[in-house]
Image 1 (cartoon, rainbow, N blue to C red):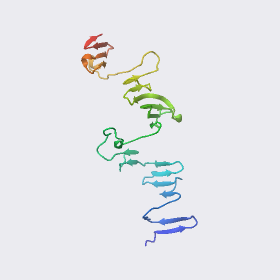
Image 2 (cartoon, helix red, strand yellow):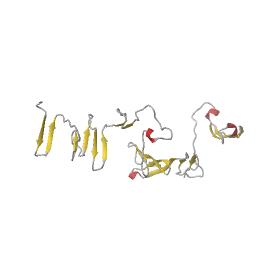
Image 3 (cartoon, rainbow, N blue to C red):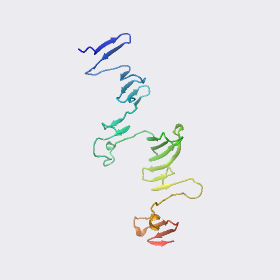
Amino acid sequence: ATSSKYMEWDESADQLDVTGSLDITGNTTMVGTLTVGVDDTGHDVKFFGATAGSYMLWDESQDDLIIGGAGRIGIGETSPKATLHISDGTAASGVGSGGNPNQASLYIEDAEMPMIYFVDSGEGTDDKVMSIANMNEGLHFQSHVDANYAYDVSNIMIIHRDGNVGIGTASPARRLDIEDSVDGDFIAIQLTNTHSTDDLDDSVSIVFSPDNAQLNSARIRVGKDEDYSTSANNSAHM
């Protein structure tokens, strides 16, 4: 009915050209390449967005789904605010009784070693990549060099599934287990108090309490002028 709308068969190209809208009711089977928008990427299925350079494509040769340009992915979210925005669509959040994974916002599973890489492309050589991996019954924080993502430091920190935390060790034996290979026979732990009112407020204290009771505790305190004291059962020792 409209002169500018038409459908024609191009015998030379073996293709059907449609100008205007095409409504299909029922199942449609396509063999070959489906292009939505301008075919300029050489991939198999392409959808081009309103913003220049934004697109979604399926690369059949690599089995990859690719979101490019300014495109964002919203899962359970109609207005994604980041490259990947995940929402369960409800006000309630968190893991329910018994740790039901159906209430989690993100579920990552791998048969060998689930891992997330964080790459800061603005950093220098071998300073870009860090990762978190679930392996050997714990969460491992690691740094990597650029070449093949080989480990730089493999045991920065480990949180074992039993609650023990290790720094510099892959097998923490206590709630906090710190190992270091620095020269000398001590491990440096630095505690700094930036408050600057009086000697007492400026001090740094470590409290050892077997049952969370102050009367049964021991304390080591270091003051502003490098004065050092210990106390046990509220009795001070210099």
